[in-house]
Image 1: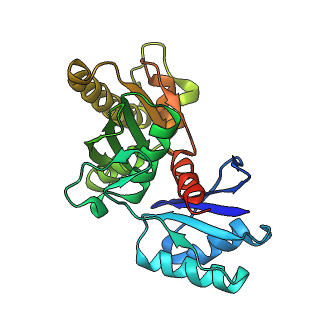
Image 2: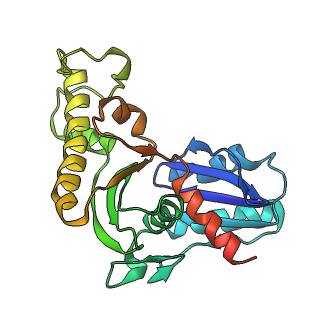
Image 3: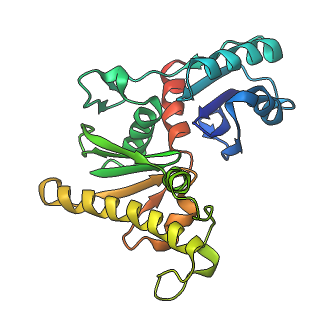
Length: 250
């Protein structure tokens, strides 16, 4: 059984992969200063895997901590995915392919494998990434902006009286405009993200043809009720990309 791990900047996601079957993704939030506590919480009672495959964008310190923890717990050294110029039918657009975030690279591979069409792949986490890939598997490039909560934290840090981010999905007004500061900031940041997605898709569809919107990431629950275009939500998109590496190395 393979343990697949996706370490982001604020959340760890994982699932097991065996006999070409990926289990439901699980997740937990973490702080880098207490990352070993998160490992313990996630996998203390996890059945010993035969191999560990990892997407990590949290830096070398977290990678080293994970390696030490898995060695102590199971006697295993994790395999860390890396971005390359070409893999599994996908061609990297970056002139320096290794500079593309490995989570974006795996997400592109997973999306292209699952949906062989012109795609706009959006990952909504601490940062929001938007990547375009055509039906032939050519990555066309992408964009990076602050995530919904990151945008709000930046605003709150520089404006003393502004309130903290709150989820407003349960009490949206029919007109979708805010009547208090909490909702005003939250809706404003959400609309900024939605506007960017719409702009990018409208900008490139005349050239590429119809784009399918593929969404993943932990901030999506607040965004999904506001979307006004068709989409496919694939919560475990990065892990789907990791499964392809596992299959290749059998």
